[in-house]
Length: 425
Ligand code: UD1
Ligand code: CA
Image 1 (tube, rainbow, N blue to C red):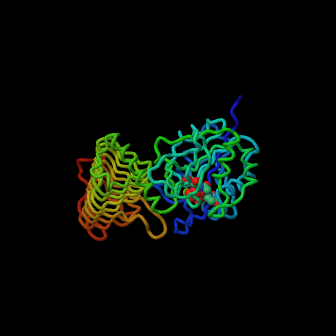
Image 2: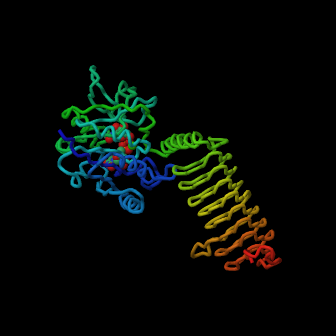
Image 3: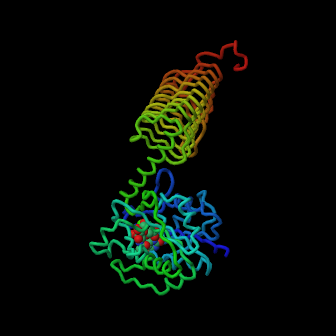
């Protein structure tokens, strides 16, 4: 028998009250990406999922805006007008779903779930529930099993008696359910529980009972870490950063103090590069081989360091490309700039890239020597092998010719390019 189609629904319609920031939980940043982005990216690895929906509630506008600007593909948004529980959320999504097939339901607040776990669940023809054995079950629904091991129910923490509260097998909040049966079961559900909500857990147990679905238990319980509070977010972030650092260490990156290296997801670092303590390296940054970064460096998006480049203490970079062996070692802002191979950017240099209306670029040539405390007012170019004196302010458009020396405020030509390098003249 050919397997039935799998559709995916990600629930992000909650009020986010426990977060207390007033902003939607699904869009909180986790290592450079919104929580929801992690969940949708994992879900996108499920082969041939046919309909993919995100359920939004009070915060749906923000979610829609983010979706439109993100890399995520093929997601449509369904709306739950009022957050009345996870089963009500699924009911709100029914109009956007086919009558038949299997529905993989995920929560938008479990960002560490892996794509291959979801793909495995999606293969279960009769339906499935994902659980984990955790040391501390606080906050999760507890799994009740019969003496033969079969699934008897899921009881939310607020509804647990003392004995149930001690159960360490918990609900990950991921279900694969027969859609036709789910529609029927949800229609008959009541909100007869401590929170007065319609629980998807109750519906899931009934559907799996009817279709004979399986319980899948995670090997690594960290995968199901849910984010209900900012403390949970910090915990998820620590787990994820540990995994990110582990991958860089395994690839030959020297990280002197993993406890203080803040490296987001999606950073490339070449072998033999060294990350000194207290660095922040944002998503999308690319660092070549044999580079040195930090201590106390902040590399923002758009930073590209070629092999052997060095960025030192209290240097901030953004949209900055440093060529091979280029150095900027102290107290500097490099924004919207390209720095040529072997150039030296002195202590306290500032690329003044913003004129109050728009950002402009600075180009620093190969082997150029930028004196301490230079301000480069963009757009401006400093030619190959040129020098700026300490404290020079190079005004916008007042390009420094290759090999020339400028100094002063505003910077003036002190020495012309050397005649023996005609290419620079
Ligand atoms: C839920 C499960 C719990 C499980 C845990 C796993 C229920 C009743 N409980 O609890 O068994 O251990 O997830 O992390 O399902 N949402 C809506 N609309 C609503 C309510 C919630 O879309 O009306 C969304 C939320 O935005 C969230 C997800 O559903 O993404 C889960 O809701 P949440 O309130 O966080 O449930 P938990 O208490 O964590
Ligand atoms: Ca949750």
